[in-house]
Amino acid sequence: MTSATADTTLRKRIWGWYFFDWASQPYHTVLNTFIFGPFFVSIAAVYYLGLGQDEGIADANAQAMWAWTTALIGLIIAFSAPIFGAMADSTGRKMPWIASFSAMYVIGASALWFTNPDASNLFWMLAFFGIGFIGAEYALIFTNAQLPGLGTREQIGKISGSGFAFGYMGGVLSLAIALLLLVEQSNGKTIAGLDPLFGLNPADREGTRSTGPFAALWFLLFMIPYFLWVREVRTDQIRSSFSEAVAQVTASLRGLKKRKSLGFFLLGSMFYRDALNGLYTFGGVYAKLVLDWEVTQIGVFGVVAAIGAAVFSYIGGFADRRFGPKPVVTFAIVVLIFVSLTIINITPEMIYGISVAAGTPDLVFIVCGILIGGMGGMLQSASRSLMVRHTDADTATEYFGLYGLSGRATAFLAPLLIGIVTTVTQSARLGVSPVIGLFLIGLILLYFVNKRGDFK
Image (cartoon, rainbow, N blue to C red; front, top):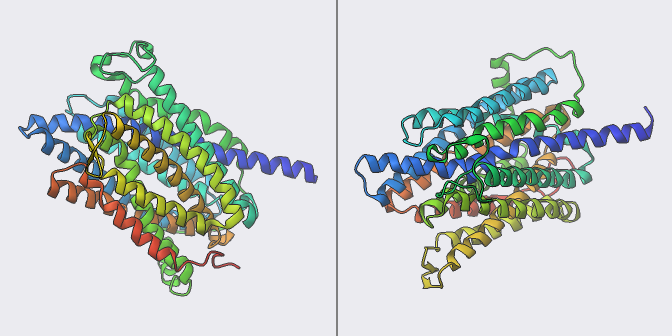
């Protein structure tokens, strides 16, 4: 193979790898954060109102239900992902696993169409949402493990940042299409003033419910470049058994005693990524319950935030290459702590206890959303790059499984703390305050991480 041909093949592999982020992003933007999540919480609040609770308590319980669900999903992902990763490393194959988890994504997302606005099948829909979300997260772990083979240590940061930026732009476009053509406002029209496509009935919230199948179709379409262009080398390695994979992961965890930088990084990222996921998961919910935004308003807010995330992720890739990933991660955490503090001090009438003009809290929350998206994109991209600096190619999936474990082992913690604080204070606004403490713990532990990783 000539050098030119090899370069062309590598570029196609990189672009194919980018397309996973583009294809999978709607589960996070359209479903989890900006459309289906707030919609689900709104009908859950109706469910609790039907039990005779007053509005504030019903809102708090709806937020707590969503919190407990995401906590359970996080636990499932946390303790199974490293084992799957070890099994995949033993065979040298990742594609069959990615295809299987992709099927979970499509099934879970598609089933959300059947969500009843009267909340009669609330728990079934929570289960299907969980199936799709688990599929998306598992597939992400395996595609992340392909990153070390796409470039040199110096190139990985830019590739990672560009991948996140490309993915966020996919989230922006899919969210915009959903808002313009599918999701109904209270007047039955989309934000473009149109009837929802395909004769969808606004009274039954069919436009909003259709975002589930829409995300599934989007994923199926845009995973085609990934499966066409991203190739892996077949090996003759013997397939590992489940028990052998468990033993391998256990040995890797014990080995962290000798790899202090990796240990501190995994531990620190466990807290700050959990805090970030808490902001992502409850951002739209917060806007719905505290600021009383319509789902379509939240969606427009999501478009703006996702554009910010794409821009900052791209910029973060260059900053990663110039300064290294650790300073980028540190900067992003500091900004997110300030943003979180601001959010819990926003009410419909005041900011930090000071009365402000009508509309100002909404504007400040939008700015906070842009920063959450932007800093979150930089944080995830640079963290992935910093993980590569602690990883060797032979066990990439296993160690990215541990990275997935660190991102999910306490995934129950942010939702749990948010649920507890929301229940105790009976305030959806104060309920999100625990993320500040989680960010601070992550920032402190990051201090002990070697910026060059374990492999000098």
